[in-house]
Length: 151
Image (cartoon, rainbow, N blue to C red; front, side, top):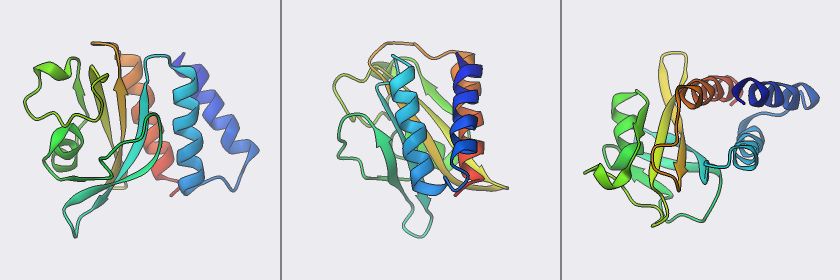
C-alpha cells in the first residue's frame, strides 16, 4: 500500500504543478484518510518557536480542541522537543498523552524538517490499538519530507 500511496501523491503533484503549502497539505491528509482505514485523524502541526507551541494546520478527521499544543505536552509536544518520530501503540499506557478523542487508541507523530530546521510534524491517530507498521513509519517520513519541500 505504501508504494501505491506514494505514487498517488506524486501523481497528484504532477497533475497540479502549483500545488503546495496548505492546499498540498489538505490533499495529503484527505488522501491518507480516504485510503488507510486505521488512520482516523490525520493532520499537520507547525512549530511556533517564539511562543514555544505547535499550531494546527490542515487535518482530516473529527474536530479537535487542540489547535495549539505547548512544546513538551502530549506526543506532538514531545516530538517538537526531540525532533524524532514517536509511536504510541496504546495511548492508555502513555503518561504524557494529550487526549483528543475518547476513540483514539494509538498515535504516531513524525517530524517534518526543512533542511536542518524542525518546522512541524504529521500526526496520525487511530481507533485501533497498535496498528502502525514499519511501512507506516516509512510512508509518513517520506510524506513529511515531501511536503516540507513544498511549503
